[in-house]
Length: 167
Image (cartoon, rainbow, N blue to C red):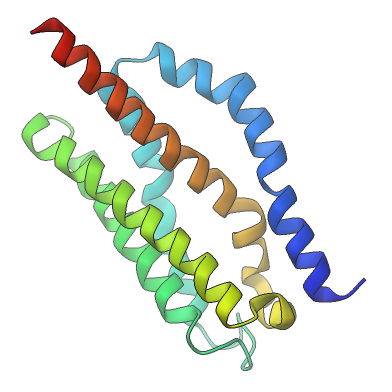
């Protein structure tokens, strides 16, 4: 099997164990929590996205990693992580917390979709070996990030629906 095929298989299969784990363990817990606590848990996970800056470190990624991939991935993750941290810092003030929750989820989803788009357009699977130590990020970490963004939006919509029903 070619490295490109292996990466593509791993990218797709990365969602399977996370969806199984999420459905069995994480989702039931998140749904049982108060909305602010569930969003804080998701924000805590995303606050570690500063780690994406590693895509910019020579030697961690190969010199032939397509140039258009690393900056978008690195700075999108960094922005998402900072917004998630700000949301956590503002959790005591709902007027600050909720807009930051929406912001980090929107920025995070745009980042991940942008990374997938750039990966396809720049033939990232054909350069899989150039990911170096960052190879695990799209295969292991990104699926959980995308799943939790979807969950965060669902919980936001559910919370909003409950607020409207109460009025």
